[in-house]
Image (cartoon, rainbow, N blue to C red; front, side):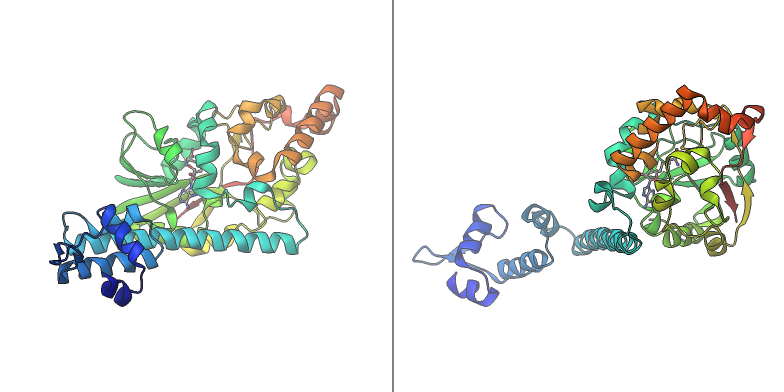
Length: 365
Ligand SMILES: C[S@@+](CC[C@H](N)C(=O)[O-])C[C@H]1O[C@@H](n2cnc3c(N)ncnc32)[C@H](O)[C@@H]1O
């Protein structure tokens, strides 16, 4: 055993431990009762050590090397999957660090959520439980999205969440990386794959159309996600937000007068033109109806009191992204202005509108 330990550059204690937990069991004993490693045992040890050096935990390694030994190609596939997951996590961390560096360079405060990398799926694992309270399909927005799907029969819904906007008259496959969101899909909803937009586990051109609704701004790498949608589907439909138009921050009174921090949240977001270019899309505005059934950030533009309700805000990721200080200040200030009549004075004209263009855009490619 000492010789094997020396050759493998591990301690005898490590080998004992591997033996005790059944990871690498020497199959023989010397006449003096010492453990003896066969050629097969040494091969297994070499494999175990390789995985350990890649940073896998003992339990993962035990699964990878298999007991009884599993098909070598299947094990390699699993290892490959684990490495890709790690690479994805590392990429997302690099992107989060880049965003923080850029935000700090612009003198902006980074919220604790952002520092913890609580973005994308991790953000939704943390806040997604509050989503179903107010988030659902709005029929008018749905009609516009479904018209853009054209005659597509097979549909991939990326960043699908709880399944809003999934058409019931077509064959839908959903992709959603947050386990909390997947767990809230209603019984009978389309099958849902645990994956992220940046790395879609489908062959080229597997679907007639790929759609993504209110999700691109959460992706670690939006350009990569859009490229993936383009790769796996013949057509692409994306509901997103326009930050190209000068003064876009002033389109919505909530951002303009109470939550200027929203601009920082979207500061690093790719331009609408760049996203449209990436997939070769045309762009159409998506007006938000005054009584929008989907409680998205802009939904209550004519019902300002709704933003004072905690359960309404909890279903909008913006509030978590700006952090509690900005949220409390905005809510206090809006409440004061509603009480004093100042909000009505400034926004009186809205009462006459049935729908408003607040920057939502449909990209259709
Ligand atoms: C605002 S929800 C929208 C859900 C749904 N499309 C809808 O319209 O109700 C955003 C969703 O994007 C998901 N998401 C976050 N990062 C993602 C990524 N990299 N790839 C795909 N989806 C992602 C979140 O987990 C969350 O479910």
